[in-house]
Length: 68
Ligand code: SF4
Ligand code: SF4
Image 1: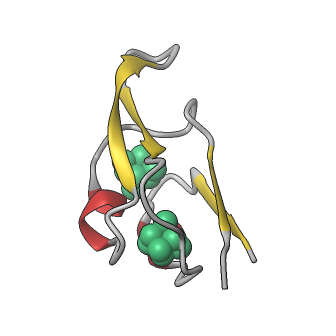
Image 2: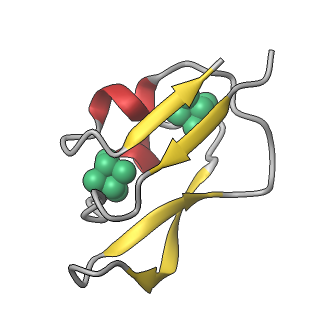
């Protein structure tokens, strides 16, 4: 099964919690900054999301949505 992860970069504070829980290591820190000056995260092109929801559940800023 493949799922799709949508990250709202303006909500992200770059805390890295989602990076640490993804079993597929799909989430990486972007080089860019959002409008509040935070590094935001994005999804890597390497590998496929398995839709475990761990990233969405752990994000304190509800910046991640997962669509299955
Ligand atoms: S849903 Fe799971 S596999 Fe997909 S990006 Fe989030 S933590 Fe990684
Ligand atoms: S857990 Fe949320 S706020 Fe923290 S880096 Fe991931 S998307 Fe950004």
